[in-house]
Image (cartoon, rainbow, N blue to C red):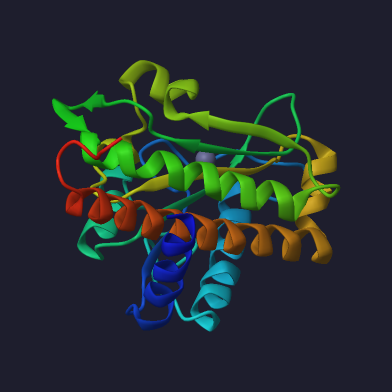
Length: 239
Ligand SMILES: [Zn+2]
């Protein structure tokens, strides 16, 4: 069965149409302009990494949609999700930098529904779809950044300040497509700031994110395939 999946996956990969990835460079939004380091800002790092990731993914054959068109364009988190929904994206990657006493990158995904302004989301189907994608995304990032930048782990929306209050992040609640948020570095940590400002560190981060997208994309394809195979099985042989 595993070999069958691998074969079908390679076929899907070669004949499939371009997959759309939405890149969401964080801030400015209703939650503000983001955190600051000593020499740069979260706003600037997310924008620059976002553009570099866009170019990289386009070279690899993905269709890419950005949630904002210039550095200082203010877009609400609800609107950012709507852009991903309209694009029917395979994945929305939300780029942020953290402010804490820690160091390294962390990846967040919605693991349960939340509520904001009376709206409940994401859907159970989306929650089911995003979990394996987030695991693969995180694993690919960890492998690429091993020995370069520490990892703070794979976490859920409920482990963020806003997610704790709402159940999930606003961007996740309004999103009909799988959305993953990456805190790329802890920008208030001078070591992390130096990493993301260095040419090598920046390149490693863009590479890690691109590998993460690739891993998540493969997980999504495998998941769809698995579901269709299960759908074809006679009742009683499932499990
Ligand atoms: Zn942020």
